[in-house]
Length: 176
Image (cartoon, rainbow, N blue to C red; front, side, top):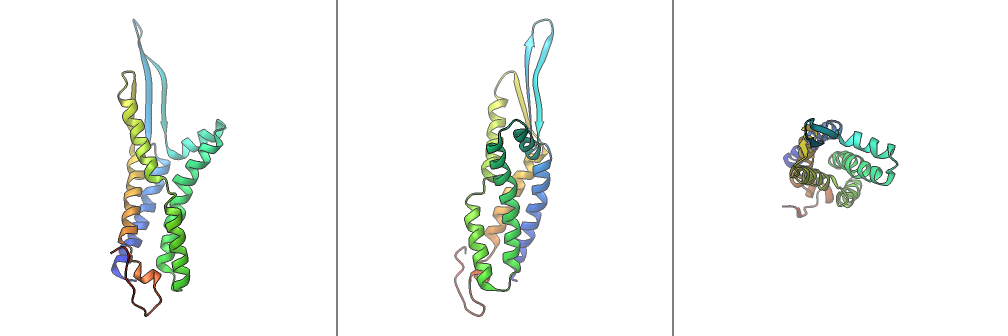
């Protein structure tokens, strides 16, 4: 394995390490209150959610489609993509490596992790602009955003010539 692929493997492992707290730690807190004369602020809503607790809550309230989509695109696809990329770097049989890499490229197009991070950030900005609504991004968001950035970096660092070519045959690396 060449140096670039060793770096890519390390980045994939680091991205997985970031993904776990990104999914389990609180990602966003939203507080809605109202100012009531003589009583002060009256709390109407206060919720802190992680990705996993949000998925559970969606299932509890029978929002199964939304919960399943978030589970699929924010949990299953990122984990499967990272595991498959590790396998691509480990396989010795070039045909299998190429097929697995092509599959990862296909599911990578459907990975919504980066879209999820942007969506949470936009939700934060939208609620932060209201007078009686406060929101704060919590540590889970930063771990999840780190996962997104590091996993993209891992794919960019990975060199394809060792993966998509036959052993002993020189080929061009389309990423370089």
